[in-house]
Length: 331
Ligand code: CP3
Image: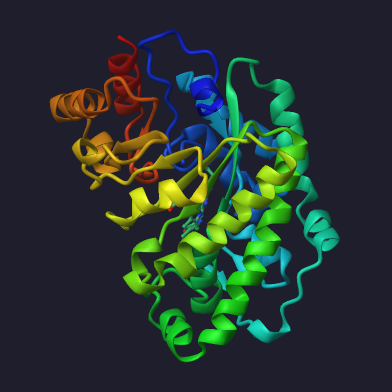
C-alpha cells in the first residue's frame, strides 16, 4: 500500500507535504504556550494543550499531515528514568540490568499521549493524516546512557563496545517497550507512524544489521501482525548506502531521507520516499530554496513521494520562508 495512498487523497501531480519538527519553537504560538508552562513534559502530558500544539502548524500552513506533539524520550521516562529538558536535556543515571518492561505500565504511563492522539484525530480534518512516532532503539539507548545531548555520545558508545551484552539487552527492552507504545498510538487513531533513528550514523557498518535493522524490523513485524498494511516511515540519518538494504529487508512503507542522500541514486529503493530539503536551506529561503525544491521534485518525478525536510526544522526559521515553501510547492 502506498503511504496512506500517499498521505490521503492528494490530487494527481500535487505533492503531499509535512515538515519534520513542524510543531515547535519556530512558532510564536508554541513559544507562548511553552512560556506559560512549567516544563516541556508538562505540555506533552497535557492532552488538551498537546492537541492544540499538534494542530498549530496545520492551522497556520495547511500541511497535509500533522505529527503528534510528543518526544522520543517518553520511552525512557516510562521505563523509570527521569528526563528533564529545562536546563538542556538531562536524564538520570540508570542501571540497564534493572530495567523491566511491563506492557501495562508503559500504556498506563503514556496514556495521556494516547488521549492526545484521540483528541487530535477528532479535531483534524478527515483528509489530513495524523502521524505518530517513536525513537529507534539505538538512538534512544544513546540518550539513556549518555544522559545529555551536549557532549556527543562518547560514554554511551564506550558502554556499547565494552558491555555489549548489556547494551544489546537495552536494545531488546527498548524494542519491546516501543512496540507497546506504537500499538497504543495506532489503537488511539494515528494513521501512520514514523520511527526516528537519528543517530544511526554512529553504528559501525558491521553492526548495522544487528543494532539498526533488527530492532526496527521487529517493531514493524509486531505492528503488522495486528495491523497488516499499517504505514510505517523510517528515518535513518546519515547511513547512506545502508538505506536501500534497509528498505528491502524491513518492510517499511517509506524511507525518510536526510539531505545528503543523493536522490538520483534511488533506483534500487522501491518504497515511498520522503524528504529531503536541508533545514538550513529553509532557514535562508529565497531563490536557492526554490532551486533546491525543483531539484528534489525533478529527481523524484514519477515516484510515490512525500515532501519533507532532511532533518528537523530549525527554531530560528522565519515563518515567511515556510510560507514561501508552501506557496512554491503548491503552485
Ligand atoms: O512536529 C514535531 O515533529 C514535534 C514532535 C517532536 C519533538 N521531538 C518535540 C520536541 C518530535 C518528532 C521529536 C523527535 C525527537 N526528539 C528526535 C528525533 C528527530 C530529530 O530531530 O532528530 C530526537 C533526537 C529528540 C530528542 C530531543 N528532544 C532533543 C535532543 C531535544 C532538545 C533538548 C534541548 O537541549 O533543548 C528535544 C526537545 C524537544 N522535542 C523540543 C520539541 C518541540 C523543544 C523543547 C522545548 O520547547 O524546549
